[in-house]
Image (cartoon, rainbow, N blue to C red):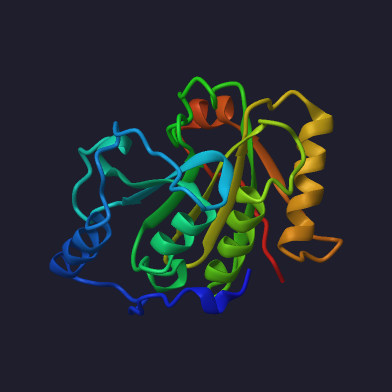
Length: 225
């Protein structure tokens, strides 16, 4: 889709104060509906195959006693192409987020957590990005996901873009880690969607491994050159 369909808010990608981080969180939360409300597709709009929910998380400096789900905020659930672009156009682009932040885009009934019933037997493909590539790669990935380009039935659970100080990390989650045919098809489609070089090395990590080592991305070394 044409990137001119959105006009992202601009920001500084350097370290920010707690006051500035709180302001950014409030900007994101302006779009918060009740997570339990039923989302209907407006008449005349193009319904997506699944409703999707956008989540946002930010690790607040100095607050080490908060659990993962305390950082996680539901932003919006949308049922159609038009609703997606309407909300997306008001979000800060990933490359303009500061600090330790994440966007999570998952099917409506799936929480972006390893322990969720839809995720617990699955895993994710991981690609580490040099700074400056996050916004383009994230948009290419989520448009492909919403458009059902991966052709693996209901295997796709969601996608995450993780903004870090030295690099950014893109991951695509699926339900069944032990199905090599499915995970290989997802990998190949992901390479095409992101226009990765043929020799790009990607890592697949199961959520069971993440639960064991308490890390989403530890022991990976995958870069787009």
